[in-house]
Length: 404
Image 1 (cartoon, rainbow, N blue to C red):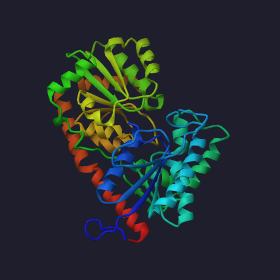
Image 2: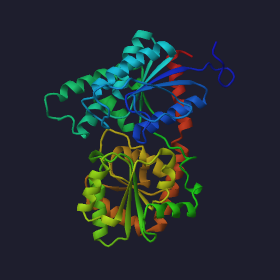
Image 3: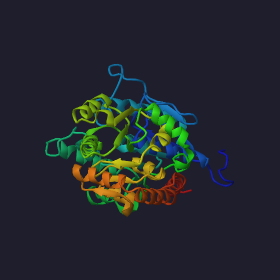
Image 4: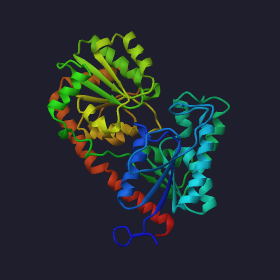
């Protein structure tokens, strides 16, 4: 007999299927990590099945696939090798499902929902799909799929089939909910908006002393008199990195005493070369991968944070960490950014690099506005984007589906 949770609740056994190299310090991995930690804090048992690479984290039950014999590394995002990875993941998920006997299967991304859909029917347990963006939209963003090609309609049809498998779908934005309703005809009752959240305890600007910040700044060789524009996330074209570098070039050419602190991976050397060609030289620092535990200190150096992503379908969780750190945010004007930042964001039209650069410059010259926007954004993160509250909502959905 399972022990009680909070006195009279029966703990649930949750099988999470994560078709990625969990844990890595970016994007959807943070959502998986924080959901798991907070579900465990409520007394529930979570087992994560994932690819064979990734960091093991203390306190998490992570079960990995066997490695592929012919491919020892893999790309972020869409790749032809993912078919093989997901075949291995399906087999491992079946093994773990027999071991765990889950009450709920929680599939992340479309591959997780597809594998979970099969297991859900075999085991007769409900499936929850954590929808983090359109499959076809992501493949187009990654230039892995031609929206006008012959394959696109078949992939779109597959995505429509996957969205009909789960009994409940969690969406990271209201915009994603509307996409599911309008484009994939998912019944409204199955869709539950659950925005990405921020850990406002770890991401708290008051935790970092000026001495710690100065030490880090010297280690990164950033001149003490420069204002810092920070970016933390994946370094890819679809995240808008070329636009960020071009905006930085415009700022330097305009005589702004500014420094870009670009944190993340992959493709670091590629973008370093691009930055040199643009004349950024000593006005930019690429850190490479920054561990999640270290991210708050690194972000605390920023005077302005930026979100140049233009995707119409994916979330933008990095913005929530910026908000928690009380940083003003310059972002492209997309539905997801508007949902998080509302009228507290500073926006440029998607693709308008000149406007993006000007928005940054305006904030750099207005410290009072930066302070007010930053503090209001932190208050918004605290009150509207709590992982503890999100986990409680997930449990409500689990209970509804399992009849508890």
